[in-house]
Length: 319
Image (cartoon, rainbow, N blue to C red; front, side):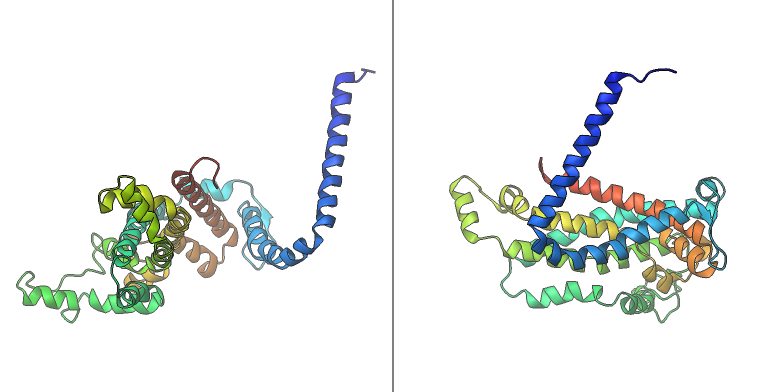
């Protein structure tokens, strides 16, 4: 028989001792701070049950054929191969989602901060705050209102105004024309998605002490733009990170507004996003394995972009 290498045996033994020592030290720290872990336990239990467990379950189901009525059947990478090699609608939804995310994510993020910065300069803020935050309170309700605004007939506000001004001779089908419907949905979503980030930016701006700006003027800050770049942005960095993550989440989770305005599915899938594709296979066709594969792809994209934005907006050693 071949003899075991003494160096390998010693290394394995050292690793076992090291692991045992780490586990012992971890358990000792848990017992030492048991009061803190006791108060942390409710959140951790809910986080594991409603966040970690669903994510792990979706990853497992993405490698199976699961129609809800029968137990999951392991099929390996078949769902992912079908997604990228045989599902033209998914590829279309991927393209629409990327375009949607590029336009609504960074633009919505910068616009939310710019508006919050402008409103923070005025004394009477309440009216402006309500005007910009109210659309985000009822997404579906505002979507139906905007559907009336962009209605395809003469009774739509936009068509009515353009006809009265002589710009159009007949109503234009804003919500059924494949060249314009995505732009309309993006514009509406852009306006309605600014609420949470806008409030976070405004709260961060209002917490900055005025003496900081006075000290900046003494140190050579000459105008508002220098004040914004050298003082305001570094002091509201946590709010910037929150706003960036919210912009990514909103851009990838868009479904209700698009379906309420242009229908589901949209004509020629012109406004069909990954979320709409997920809803189609999960709740209409009940192909949960395939839908789980779509959700995993969407999760990877959202996590990757969120991590990228956090790194871009953080300094060394943060996040």
